[in-house]
Image (cartoon, rainbow, N blue to C red; front, side, top):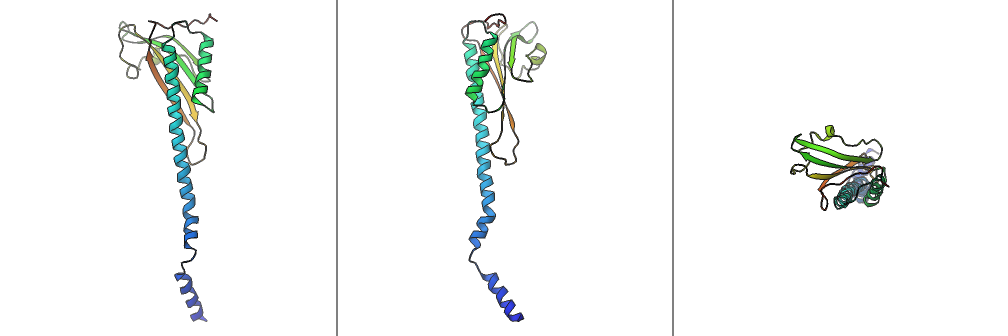
Length: 186
């Protein structure tokens, strides 16, 4: 009887049929996780690129404007960003015009408007330490500053939490020495 059990155990140990199926059952979840992870990360980088391009488009649009900017214009700019960025979650945008002041030796805010929850208009105190973020410009030169925020939520749960995508774009004015904001204009 013992000899029969030992013979059976040796035969079981030496049997190789079905090992591919067992190996596949073990490896397949890891391969699937890797494939989904690659998709999620690629999609995140793609969304960040789209958001940056949308913010660049808005900054360029504003830099070419020669008429006063109105609250409706800013509302529509936010709608345009939402469309261009193909955002599925809530977005935020802040549009500001800043200028360099030799007298103050810092950037100063001409005006700032924001759309989206949780944002405030940019103030002189906010940009006081931003000299490393903004370009070197001559005295009283103005720059359009467009900041955008959106959230990328991964399609698959692979261990990655939602990520906030931020864009910080500045552009010099092209056709006009200044870009004014008129809150009373329609």
